[in-house]
Amino acid sequence: MMSESTQKWVIDTNVPKTANRAIDPDNIPEYLCKCVQVCVEAIEEVTQNGGLVLDYGDLFFDEYRGKLSMSGQPGIGDMFMLWVHYERWSFPAEDRVCITPDGDSFNEFPDHPGLSDFDDSDRKFIAVANAHDKAPIVLQAVDSKWWGWKDALDEAGIHVKFLCPEYIETKYDAKFPK
Image 1: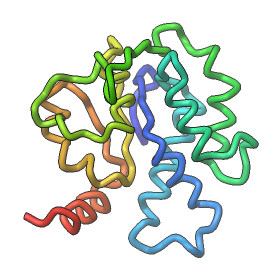
Image 2: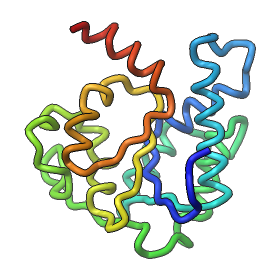
Image 3: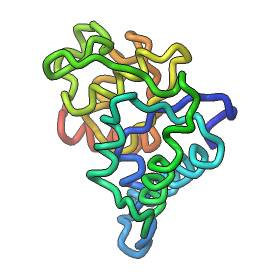
């Protein structure tokens, strides 16, 4: 589904959270079914083949832990949480990136005028992707605000893979009509 096994990935928390919806398929709205499946596949790909990039200070881990179950149950996103818990210290050293807090942002966050209003809580994902020498792809599922920053992110050299582009674009257009 995603790409070669040497690819590096930064995973926004909404990807495993969306994957968790697969535990109750009867209650997934029709418009989200494909999105949930793609998120499940992305989580399975990373947990089976590796390539996850994390921050050294555990900001990602702490956010994941706050939104997912450390028991690894009942969903695939929770299984991802447990996998990260047990495996994160065995990742290659290059895949644990140091980022330096700077107020509500990070020194490693790209200096681009189109990103000046980027969500403070998501800046860590972009800072890590920007600081890593192999330019990991940031996986994003359902945060529609990111759609509005896609061009600026691309211009800054940050590669974002929108796992649910139809959903996120529609949601963005509804919130921010042209």
